Amino acid sequence: MAQHEHVRVAVIGSGFGGLGAAVRLRREGVTDFVVLERAGSVGGTWRDNSYPGCACDVPSHLYSFSFAPNPDWPRTFSGQEHIRAYLEHVADTFGLRPHLRFDAEVRRMAWDARQLRWDIETAAGTFSADVVVSATGPLSDPKIPAVPGLDSFEGEVFHSARWNHDYDLRGKRVAMVGTGASAIQIVPAIQPEVARLTLFQRTPPWVLPRVDRAIGAAERGLHRALPFTTRARRGFLWGIRELQVQAFTKHPDELGLVEKLALRTMARAVKDPELRAKLTPDYRIGCKRILLSSAYYPALARRNVDVVASGLAEVRGSTVVAADGSTAEVDAIIFGTGFHVTDMPIAERVVGADGRTLAETWKDGMQALRGASAAGFPNWMTIIGPNTGLGNSSMILMIESQLNYLADYLRQLRVLGGRVALDARPGAVAAWNDKVQERMRRTVWNTGGCTSWYLDANGRNTTIWPGTTTEFRRATQRVDLAEYDVIRPSLADDQADDEAGVEAGEPGARSGAEVGA
Image 1 (tube, rainbow, N blue to C red):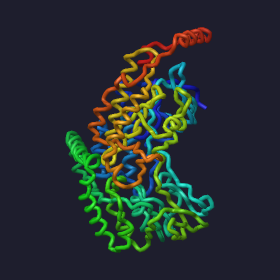
Image 2: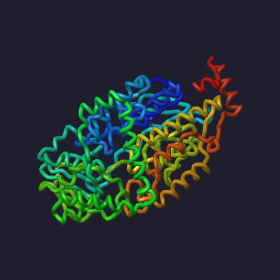
Image 3: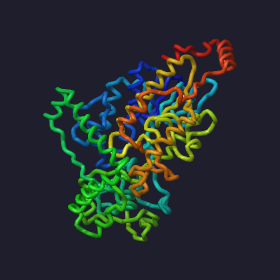
Image 4: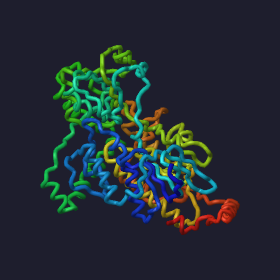
């Protein structure tokens, strides 16, 4: 067990959010920080998801940091291995390695109201921090449904985010459960090698072609020689997606033309009318995330693929049983059933000022001021928090906006001086959340007639941002101290700390200069 370590800032997670926060801290002159990572390398979801065919559905030049452009993306939509390599490159380029603490899964963190700090228990030792930045991300912890009989299944079972590369699928009978973003990439990747593939589909997704291509050496050379061309490409990709937002948030009926394109794409690949009927959604496009693939429909039309328009209900020995009663004999079950998004497990490990966990505070739904600060959790900030997700663009844009907010948060603490904490006022959190939910009412995610992972157990959309990335950047540019309570230690606490320091022969309370370091 490592010795206790106190830092100015503790960042949880080393995916895009965590590494982005680490880079921003260094740029702000904050070098007293650690990045606590539960695994043995950086990458977050792009480390964990290594299934066949794994790739991003956002163009590479937009799915990267603006402060770390990559002129050498090999494809317009890059694969998992290239994105993970990019994140390793970011860690090296910005000197983040000394701050990384691997195999340090956070088991519990609790606010110490007397010391105005967070006490953190990890698998690698204990830490304390003046400020915590939680960047665990919503796509971190896989969700496998409780299927009766699954425990007794003698074949292979795994989730798409925990792919078993030691298991050979060739010649096997495979059940694929789920039809989300992972499944539509896995199906065409494994279909040619399995003996039989049975796809359990509760809800058919809307699928559009993915216009992917290799980026040639000349094109990459141009981006290296003239960096402004990379910025221009990124700006163009961003602008197109900003223009699309109105259709998702205010005028869902305008998406009808996109539906026709998706149906034509399906009709060209799937000639069987019965199969087309199974694959045709009955809700407005965009209500669930629009998926991109040019290989999914052709794979489903192959002779060794069965589409069951029903969810997996039961497992009996080697037999999988659908909710509609149909059965199939399989050797392996692969779950592409998503993640704990609105009930993130990390929330059960964060204990706030009143002794309640974040999960208890959010039991009626996640909400945070400007997607970052939760009331009752001083000096705690989350990256990709409630209502910061996007349905049509790059999450890196939202992350960078939240990093602006983090930077100003730290500046405000430095200006206030001394031992100090900021706690989001409940009224400010409620006002922000009410405004977001009011804007959400007209969006396709709420009116499109589907049930999606965007919605929590109460049917509220607590994940998606109902506006443009420009609007969110404006909203998170500065910290408004009127939305926070400023917390300082009581005089009695300071005196007790001074006395304890004298008895131990150690310095007493830290000075304001130390807090701002």
